[in-house]
Length: 212
Ligand code: ADP
Ligand code: MG
Image (cartoon, rainbow, N blue to C red):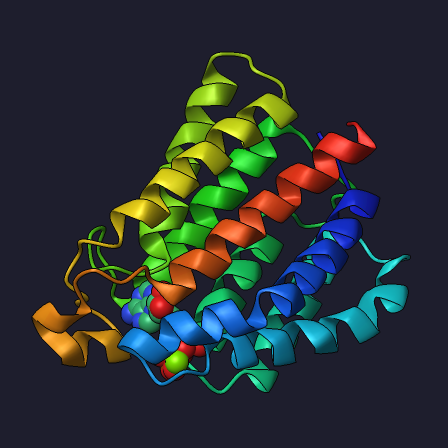
């Protein structure tokens, strides 16, 4: 189970983690993109930090909707609309909810991923955030099917995300700016996959520390 309060705490933690890793994300993007992923994400999530207070009396769906709109309007890069779509689909699947049970979280991960893949016309193996979000979604779902609790299933999801992230290193980029490099994108970790990994890891940290 994840509560509305934990969702707000997650957004706060993720914003801090992004700020902390801003330079690393930008360096990763400098290698295979245009060196702005850290800047983009930090701009978007700093804006979200200023909204957290106003989220306290909102349901989870409304919070996600606000996050989505903020990311779409404040991030110029490809990652803004993609993360924005993830949160928009998350919003659509959590209408009026104040808590999320494991089945809701599973549905949310699935809907968010499908949104990103549709919006980005992305396949698995294109060297994008999808290569992190996809295995994480599968691992969480398997955990839930095996009656593992939220923290345990999130642990499995984060471990799968970490492996997925490592697996982006030898891939040839097929989408986004990195695809312009062709084979020269080999050997570099995907920046958007890295932020997606931190997004899931931040959620695990919050749910783990605050209990369920
Ligand atoms: P931009 O590429 O416009 O500069 P960012 O640097 O903020 O935007 O984000 C780059 C990241 O966005 C990539 O590392 C990748 O993970 C993700 N990305 C780019 N295009 C796609 C796509 N079509 N589908 C999924 N993710 C994508
Ligand atoms: Mg970029």
